[in-house]
Length: 169
Ligand code: FES
Ligand code: FES
Image (cartoon, rainbow, N blue to C red; front, side, top):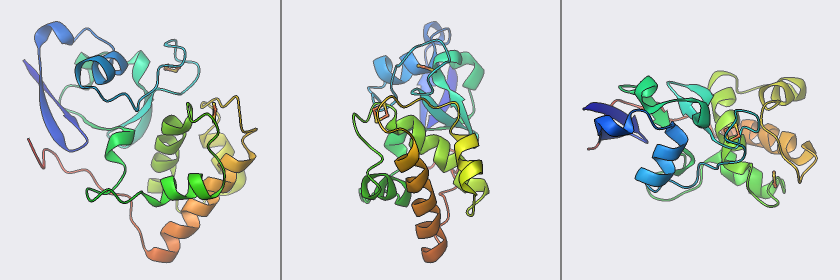
């Protein structure tokens, strides 16, 4: 039996589940349905989660490939007292959410970008988000949202939360 760390919690993974995709495991086994299933073919980015700091497509990862690694899903982005993360606030304020289907993946890709660079150019934002498809917004408001999030994080000295292995069980 292996172990997986998701949103700072440790989970024991049944051997039979190790062959599942991480996307299916999150949604069907753990009820973490904020991670969306858009294409299940690695094309749309809706299923993006962060694995050890990098954005990854959970539909293309088997659970066994992420045993022992740290995963952040959209459910783990807000503060423990329920306050939205500045990136989430910025997406709302910039009107970057329409149907919302792409939003969790967009936010997690943005989270990974801003964890490394709190002053990205619009071009760098577009490049980072190039694998996340949105059929609603035309991307302009999404790029605006990431710029706004970066500004909020700089102005408040907000640092993207560092995951620490197994805070809670
Ligand atoms: S559902 Fe994974 S890339 Fe589309
Ligand atoms: S807001 Fe609908 S797909 Fe992006």
